[in-house]
Image (tube, rainbow over all chains, first blue to last red):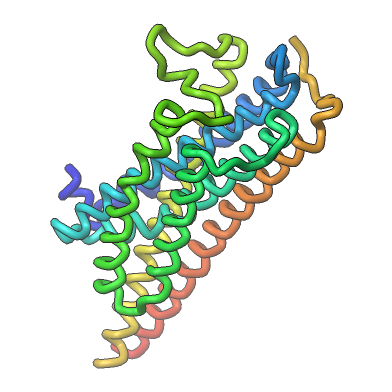
Length: 239
Length: 55
């Protein structure tokens, strides 16, 4: 299936009709999630700042997930030379960078009133910053190498190196002491968050997933169009 | 249950976080759509030029 979809033309046959549906579903889920976020009760300790969780957690989640997807795409691009693999990783990288940047920013805005500081050089925050820097380095490296195959190879290696950081981000709150709270969703015995807060969080997480899928298809289409444009321009120059 | 938009003493932090998210994600969406439209137009222009050259 992946090999079949690696052809840009075949990929677009499926992706193009999907795009308006994904945009619609993302808009509905975002609107629903935001209404639920401001209807949910305030936390007995954190007060209204708990509402930052509904945008902080999905952003942090997507930052990790997108990087993992970039790493897998880079592996396929480097080893199997799939036509779409590098284009896919390149297309989604800015989306992951924005979500990771937002996770850092919203986390700092949440930390200020709750911890008394927007930042601490602990395992979670530092590894999240390292993740953001990997995104920035990936985007900068791709932009700095004009030769497309060479850029694909170099950035694929960088993306795969950055995969090492993902378990550190995830498990950092278990490995080291931190101001950041520990896991409260994927824990033994089920989530420790009250259902009234868990539902808005799940809806927002779903909204960010669908929004990311839509952005990915739009940006991948742009990348395919750009590569076709370059190929045609070269053909016209030499014919 | 009702919509609670009064964030009290935490308003600057909560609305700051939501505002930054709306601006960043909104800009990402707009830039992605604009780039898509521009690249489609560029390719169509070049395809038309290639067609003219062939004739």
